[in-house]
Length: 554
Image 1 (spheres, rainbow, N blue to C red):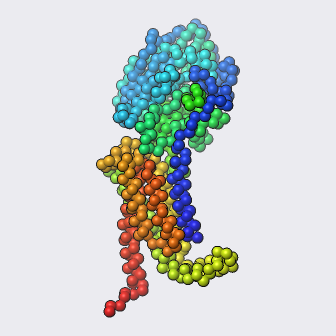
Image 2 (cartoon, rainbow, N blue to C red):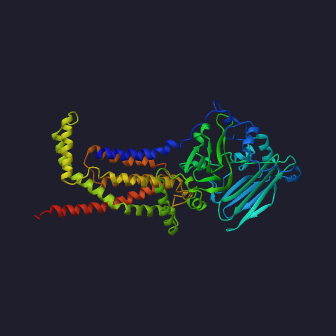
């Protein structure tokens, strides 16, 4: 029984750790042949749900609020294309008066691999001439008119300090009764903006979609090197659930979402979050196939009232509200991961080094689980003492593997011995299983928390979110794992002992390319386990002497 439990633990670790290698591999782009018509639209306007004729689409999206007399609409437009600069303590943004779209959004507190301010608008936007937060109605000609129109801005430049807020208005109107107002409110203390869009087509008010795309950010090969990078994609919060759709797993039949509270286009650490009115909103994730190897992806959302463009930082998203923190991929043990994050952040506030914060939190977890660890060690020690009797039983019932009756008697007598000596055969393994969610929670935290990105520890570890460039930590982790295994009492079973000695090798292979922050956690855990095991072994040895009496002096 104990052997099977131990095997289950090993397989559980292998499954959880191997999961990442299986699902972070890049998939080749699906060829354009065989795609639905809506996925092969020309690169002018990504499809909306249930692609229809423009007139019918416009009728369904239109909400008439009374026609505007033609005489009341005076043409409004800009004279030439201008770039409106927005500067806050958190970001630098650029909006173009052509289409009133976002052409640049650079984060001041986060850098790319070249040390420059991190750009969230994809470089492909400039190549296509299509930028984020453009308007979409389902009528390609009308969309082109709106997104190529020259808007009149209310300001040429905005500079905000912390605590300040300012408004920027874009307006456009023509003689045909087409009219657009974009009102954007910026704040100097965060990454979110308020957005109000009013649109009239031929004097009739419409509810347009706002489009984010093509893609998100500019993930370079340098940024991917040594880091466990997840595929970019979208997350949609609807009906109290977060639904995810990655680019590499794109399914055109599952790309429409209704009653959306928010939808985000994100990568591992950053996102564009579009917050909408759930009662009337929908989101569409669309792909435009250029050729067999190139495709562009877009997220369209209507009824948008607020946009967040920044890091997937727990504190920022919690303060934002709307359950936006659920956009962070904390995994199946999310509640544990969140608790670990809060604890780690508290430690970091006192000791501003994320590496040492990991070590200290590992120490605190070790103390918390000491009673379980001690019970496990004590159980394993008792099992070791009983091995001569268990071995004698196995010699007595040599044919147990083939003879069912002998196997039954062997099991009965083995359990009787365990019961007489107060030993639980699963006592050595269950504490390890209980700690497995903690490990997995820590794994997810160190993988997705943006705080570890570009955060150094000491000497050669300049980024806790990427692998150790010299593999020092994984090798030390393997060595300390081996020492810890040798110090831990075993049942004496040869198969189990071999398995336990192989475990450090398997763990080293797994951890060789893992983020150095995660390897540091496991290394610290091993070092603390060695010290803890040494103390427990001495204590149990002393207790045995007291129980059996001291040896007589000659």
